[in-house]
Length: 161
Image 1 (spheres, rainbow, N blue to C red):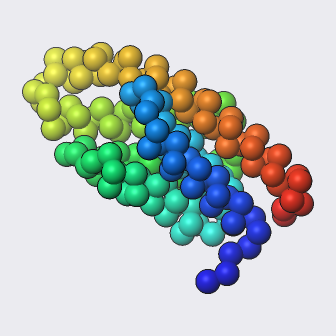
Image 2 (image 1 turned 120 degrees about the vertical axis):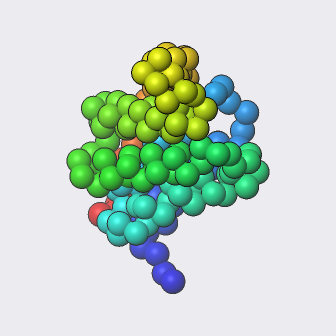
């Protein structure tokens, strides 16, 4: 299967993000939300856009481990890829929306799996998750900027369509 020059460059950026996820990092400061948004925004073939963040997660989770919440996490990355596909842009608005999507979906999953299914349980779950959300925002903004500006630089240098 032959890939275009653009697809090869895009996949190389995803590969680097996979490697970064395997390095020690603060909780929730990881590149996968950025990868999902990036893939949805820039891959012309939607099957690659959907596959890239899932592949990144499966490969890294084989080393880092799977958990009860893994299906919800993967679902959240599919939703973030959809944000990229629908909006066709990576900017502060889509990055913040992606961060919120991840926060809401994963914490609903944590609530259902680990807390009393009461309003108090929901409030407790989301309140305790706020520090992780702050880390997610910082990581999502940083890694999105690195992917976006790195790709723009490479696209200009390599004259990608």
